[in-house]
Length: 365
Ligand SMILES: [Zn+2]
Ligand SMILES: [Zn+2]
View 1 (cartoon, rainbow, N blue to C red):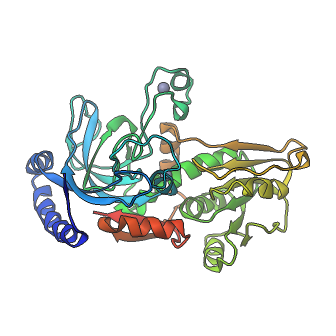
View 2 (spheres, rainbow, N blue to C red):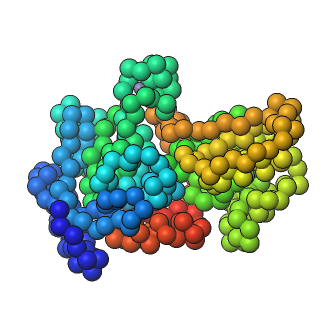
View 3 (cartoon, helix red, strand yellow):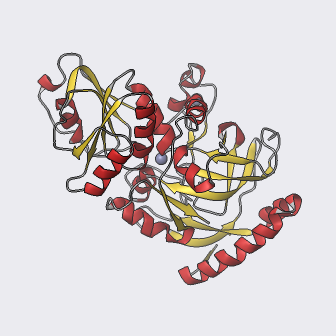
């Protein structure tokens, strides 16, 4: 492993891109090249330190795995929680990134699902055991031995990634790589969160980032009324929500003009749980869509009384993915993306940390 300066890395980036372009015309050459070359990657060596631009060997696909040339990888708040040490025991060193779109360039033993050159998406759920009670009960999202892309296995902040083909999805043609990337987590986990709200007509969404901007479009398509809650004084995000079909937007300490049937919390702020409960109609539910949240403060039982409930969403199942990718082109969900070169991953994470990204940020190698 060799450490490079960012400038050297940018130069290599351009050089490698032209080699890959040439090689992709010749499928087999490409696979050979991918196997034998190093690749650029942004690597987390230790939590709470910036990612490092490194040259590491391209992965070799194991049984049931495909090797993917990454076209785009979206940046998720979960990546930030991993980098900031808020999620326990990541694989180290780690290539983060779990919203990956790319093309298949090689397959390991038994991998036959996708042809060479086909475009696939890699989500957060990287692999499950298939035998634990959760897997057997149709709840593989809760698998006891699940592997997670960009957390317990290497992800897509790199030129190549190896993924278990059984957990990848074909990507609808209407999307470019960058447009499709945020669908892989912001879209999928958002969609699972939306499903947890049942048939709620009046829906509050707290935290208007990547997931919210996708799920608002699905909710409006399903004829729900969306009430968007943002950070204080974030009028850009409030306008953005209205432009996507929300009927109201305001900051998260406000109460909406009507009682909500359900609320989804995408912001990782525990104080929003009682805040959202206050906005709920009787029987309503608060769904926490994130993997990490600051502590939920104490609150009066009155807020929960009358059959209000609080639940969380963990990970995704492959069925969620199939359902979502069937639905997204019908809406059609349009993603608003800002694309950055891979070597700017640290800058992008910083902007996400400070609420400076509207829509979704995507890295392109
Ligand atoms: Zn399992
Ligand atoms: Zn994610």
